[in-house]
Amino acid sequence: MDCPQCGAADVIEIKHRLPDDSEVQFFSCHRCEEKWWDRSGDQLNLKEILELVRKARA
Image (cartoon, rainbow, N blue to C red):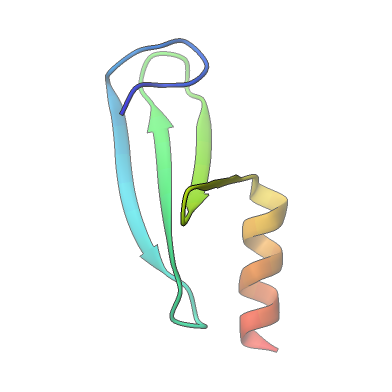
């Protein structure tokens, strides 16, 4: 995985399972510190991830 912001290949990937049993992947670039989430090929921002978690716990 290359960073969409700076193109660096030094990106960490962490898979998370949400309370509704769906999966998201968190990515973080070591070079520029860009962070993003992916759910089934759709890029999400922090606000969207927090909303998914909130809904799943309600």
